[in-house]
Amino acid sequence: MAMIEFKNVSKWYGSFQVLKDCTTQVEKGEVIVVCGPSGSGKSTLIKCVNGLEPFQSGSLIVNGQSVGDKATNLPQLRAKIGMVFQNFELFPHMNVTANLNLAQVKVLGRGVEEATAKSHALLRRVGLIDHAQKFPGQLSGGQQQRVSIARALAMDPIAMLFDEPTSALDPEMINEVLDVMVELAQEGMTMMCVTHEMGFARKVAHRVIFMDRGEIVEDATKNDFFGTPRSERAQQFLSKILHH
Amino acid sequence: MFSAFDFDVIQRALPYLWQGMTTTLWLTLLAMVGGIVLGTLLALMRLSSIKIISVPAGIYVNLLRATPLILVIFWFYFLVPIAVKHISGDSYAQGIGPFYSALIAFTLFEAAYYCEIIRAGIQSVPAGQVNAGYALGLTYQQTTRLVVLPQAFRNMVPILLTQGIILFQDTSLVYVVGLTDFMGAASKVAQRDGRLVEMYLFAALIYFILCFLASYVVRRLQLRITPPR
Image (cartoon, rainbow over the protein chains, first blue to last red):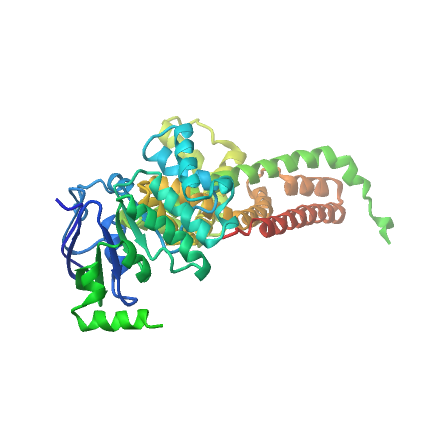
C-alpha cells in the first residue's frame, strides 16, 4: 500500500475551487517533486497530507490512516510526518537546541538528555552544531532552514513534506539547503517537495507532479516529464523556468 | 507667597500616607495579575471557533467595556454582601469588606481590557508559527501554551504594563467605597487639617512621578524586546 494516497481530493475556498479531483500516490522511499505556477494549489496539496489544510471531498490515506476522518488523531499522525516551511517557522523565543527538543519531549515523551543528544547529532549532520545555543534570529536564512529540517528529522519521521523550502532564501544559500535535501533523498527518505528547483528534481526525484489551477495536469516519471511532457501547459511552464 | 501654606503637614502624615500607598500598590498588583490571567482566558475564548465559547466571552468584554468603572466598583461593593447572604442563607453574614470587593471589581473590569490586548497579541503571532507547532504533532493546547502565548506576551509586555499604569491611577476611585488608598489617605488628612492645596498637590506630584518613571521603564523595555525575526 502506498504511504500517501490521494483519491479525488477537492477543496474550495468559498466558491473558488483550489484543488480539483486530485489523485496520486507516493510510495515508501519515493521522492516526488510538485511544481507549477503560483496559485496552482501545490502548497495546498501537500498541506492536506498532514491535515494543515482541510479538504471537502475525496479521500487521503497517509500511513494507513484517513486524514479527513474526524476520528483520526491528527497530532499523532503529524508527529510522524516532518514538514519544512517556506519561511522556516522556527520558534523565535527558543534557541536552536530548544527548537529541536520541544516536540521530542512534549510529543514523543523523550527525556531532555536523550532529546538533546538526538538534536546535537542532527545539528552536526546539517553542519550547525556550533550554533546550537543561538536563537533563530541570529542565523542566516539558509542556516535557519537547515535547522528547521533538523527539527523535523528529530521526530524520526516516516515521510517529509517540503513547502517551497528555498523560495525565501538568497540565491547563495539555496545550495546548502538543497544539499541536505539531496542527501536525505539518497538515504531513502519518502519526500514530497513543492519546489521550482528543477536541478534538484533532475538529480533525485522519482516522479514529478505538475499542477495548474488546482488540477494535477501531469504526473510522470522524471525522465518522461523532462523528456516529453505531454501537456502543453507543462511544456510552457518548463520552457519558462528552464530557458534563462 | 507660600507663607499661607504649611507643607509640614505632609511630613507629619507620611506614615498614614504610606499605609494608603501600600493599599494602592497591592490593589494594582493583584488586580493586574488577576486581570491578565482572566483576560488571557477570555481572549482564548473569544478566539475560539466554537460559538458557545466565543459569544459569551464577547458579551462579557463588550458589556464591561461599555460600563463606567465607578459603577462596577459600586455594584460589587453593594451586591457581593447580598449575594453572600443569599448563598450562605445567613442574614447576618457580612460582606467581604471594601478591599476585596474593590479587588474583585478591578480584576473583572481590567480582565475585559486585558482580554482585548491579549487577543491582539495572539493574533500578531504569524499563522505559520501555529502550523509549525501542529506539524510537529503538538496539540492545540500545547501549541497555544508553548508557541503562541510566549511570543504574544513578549510582544505585549509594554502594552500590558501601560494598562497597569492606567489601573494604578484608576485605583484612586476606591474612595467611593470608603477604602483608604493613597488618594483616600491624602484626602482625609487634607480635610482633617484643612490643608487641601498642600495635600492634593503632593498627591498629584507622587502620582505623576510614579507614572512618569513607570512609563519611562516601559519605553526602555519596548526598545529592548523588539524581537529579532
